[in-house]
Image 1 (cartoon, rainbow, N blue to C red):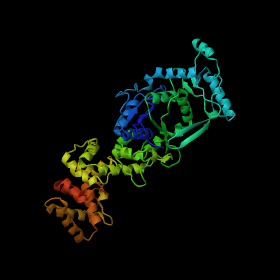
Image 2 (cartoon, one colour):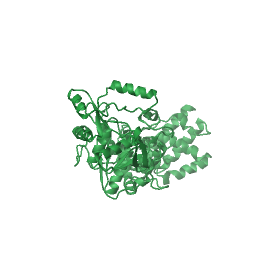
Image 3 (cartoon, helix red, strand yellow):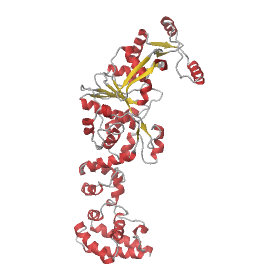
Image 4 (cartoon, one colour):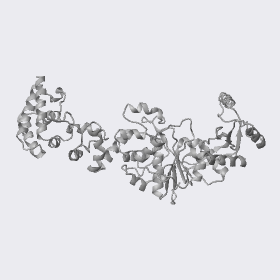
Length: 497
């Protein structure tokens, strides 16, 4: 199991029947990493032959999600390339031509069985507890007879004529050799009656014609891997290296994660769709870091990776086929790490929209002062207003009850607020080195704990019981506003007495 030194040609091939989810994003990421590690090409191919489940904006959404993650492709439907078209709906004739080659070589056959008959066969096999395979009725219809029936307008599909004796051995880069008895391989449909090729044929043809060297895909494709191997052999083509990635398990570790589980996750502020994470305030580089480590690891202790780090360190050898439970707490952890790795200027670009969407006009100088105070506390950018919205408000009116310090009465807290107001009125500025020493003297004089006195001031000045460092906040807010908010706090407390 080795990576080839030569440049890899890899493809991410989504179906526009849905939006970019974590499984697709990880597949795209591993493709991107191998291509860039080897100086190869990362190709985007749209597999849009399933017209019944087609979603109008899914292709654009997939592209947008990949770009957000930093995974730009070298060839694709929008950028072109030497092996286009890159949409399967524009390659219909190519698949029909290759299906015809299989008919001529005897590796495929025309099937005229009606849907009603196939349903009946399926029911009968189900009752007998047999594999729900096609029963081979049309496998041996003479070619001339089949062509005559087609000429007469009889509907048909094209099926692969799988061998019924012996076995087929396939090779997966993560699992090694897998041997399957041929009798359990179905005569799968390659081309439907409407002329559209199915994945089994279309993807294999495209991978060959586009000179794909490695195929990353989910382990749900392992059952049809022997069929795809047989198709390559029928055409006489050299196979790419196949890498069947581990499945994602639910956060509980019980059962495979699926799109149906999204509603349940939504209540906790999570999702499996990439576009949602942007709205939740996550960094794309944190998401890349997180999904890379669900199925791959560099060593047993390194966990922080930029996209450039991942390109440098990625290898197929370090992929793990074991199922990986989705751990959103780890995502929060990685997002915090990546937030703290950004410069103040970079962070401002991410944080500014969080305040603007609340209707605040964001002064750049003010934001520059705020960022260092909240950087260590943020898990997502949604946290920024939670920690720092009070900087942008003209007035603060906290619930009066929250102004009452622990183990004090409203009257005692009101007196603490009055004394604090008197002390802070006399200082030159709210700079910590100016305002903090006299306030600590006041704490000692009054005989209370610092947490009681400063807790009252914190709620009065920020409206919050938890905030960034108090005196640093007061310096940014400014003396006039701090005193105004303290006066308001005194009034609120006096109303409780």
